[in-house]
Image (cartoon, rainbow, N blue to C red; front, top):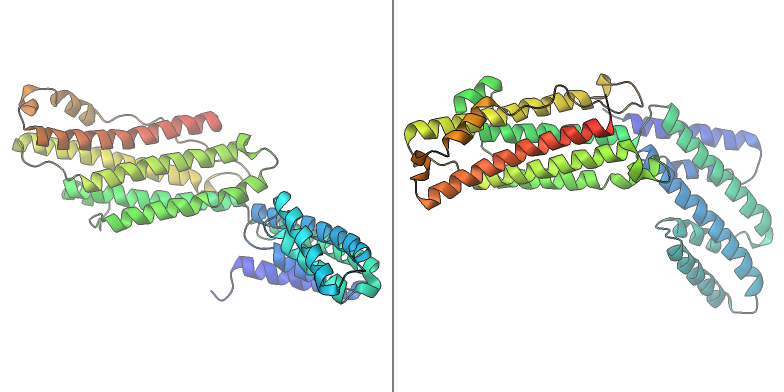
Length: 359
């Protein structure tokens, strides 16, 4: 595809803004499309934060420029502008600006050097065009192929759940190749590099939280959408930990052949049950499976522990299993704990999901 929807939306919005500025007859109309280009990137939440920073930086730069220009006239030009920029940088840090102070610095330099003869009118028009450009950019993100942080985060978690499904299926295939192949072919052995990839993917998703928080208002931590993202993050983190542990602990084989077969089959059935449950999660998180602007409902009915897994737990309390060596018992216990942790992660996640989005 030569151009994505986001790029096409940006081109159309900037072009319309430039055309409006040209036919308006007001000077310095170039700042309108520049504001659109600077803000209309990523999601609505990220653009809202960029717009806030740019507007605050513009206002701060204008105030500092006006005060510095009129109060530091007696100083040499390089020293005066250096003091003004230092004050701007300090105030920007105090206000928590990350990119806004850069815009303020440009205003200080250009106003002092280029527009010193029309400082008042230039500052007023620049602020007007900047505010209008931010408003147009935010409207375009809402009206033209809406690009919201929540929808983006849900799609990203959907992809991560797909990767977790493949990892669980690969672990099941290691235990029962025939049983796993009945579900879906092509389950390659799991490698440490894949586990690292899952962790990096989760870290990338966590970096999307500021955009989502900016989109959800002044108190995002209490918003159900933000709580749902935290819940999905917690479940994914616990599953990655369990999958990594199972990848490091090979399944026991030096026991009674019949017991090993039942042990492997019960583990494989549990892992494949979790694969099927994650597939149900993905169906609920799909954009087409819910009404617009509605949070996805939790899967129903609640997850139930497989009967074979409960029977295996009771059987391992028999003396036959306890007669094995300590090393073998530790390997069995490690696998059982990791499988139980994966099951508990999904069960807890569904209960929390139901509490966040009832019914």
